[in-house]
Image 1 (tube, rainbow, N blue to C red):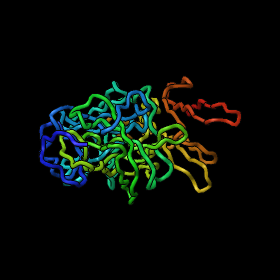
Image 2 (image 1 turned 180 degrees about the vertical axis):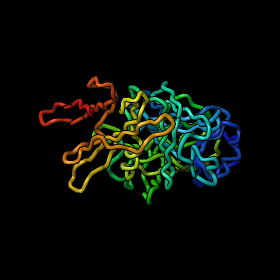
Image 3 (image 1 turned 135 degrees about the vertical axis):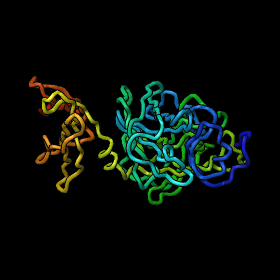
Length: 359
């Protein structure tokens, strides 16, 4: 595709996908990052409007006062997985992102209308990835599960995002496009657009998924592209949209260990709110899944050393099947933890769920 250009001809090299909103587009289009730098709020993949087609887990991120626009994937009710380049001070030079609160106010919108402040960042450190914790959980949107198998050349993935399209500088809706995997190298997945699909500025952090048993599985996160066919980029006829996404299928343990629900309650009865964590110890050598409940009690000015209150050792407990809530379930004036556990589909075709309390 070819769009009327607002910049010089776009060189055929990969660039970062985020988008700034302070009018620096022309300058950044001559560099490497995929950040979308425009004069409008965060924006999508050159492709088809997603509508209600099952990609509601795709988040729109606005970093700063219209400083940058990015995309992301809701991987748990409180956590969005996105590109570290969206938060790096100078993503052209360095993708380092400090852990903790973002340097500027950041808002993630999921499901079309659920806006949440981002209150904490947990960068991967070695890949263009960061987990962003939301101030409140998102309701009514099913998080996307991480893929369990590596991508392979020849596979097709669907990429979703809120970035530019071929015709729009600042689209209002989510778009998707189909891409073919051309190579997998270490933590990078190289993609080529199908039927004119392209990854554009503002799509940084957006999910690349494949369908497994009728459900989307998150394979990678958008990182860089050549912006071929994107609005504002003068693209030579016949130039295919090329992109590089960051693999996440091999980072299930990292995501599980960091995207942890943190219910607040008074676990020691001193009148102060404490923190309880249901921690995923992963798959053990004997094939069982091990999970533990830890509490961090407050002194009023700090938190004490963690104390293990319960451990599934001797049995098998899959953290990924758990939904956690805290409360005083036995009426003793101290906090407990409740877990709704999904046992999955049974032999008779029924779905089994159980409510457990840890007191």
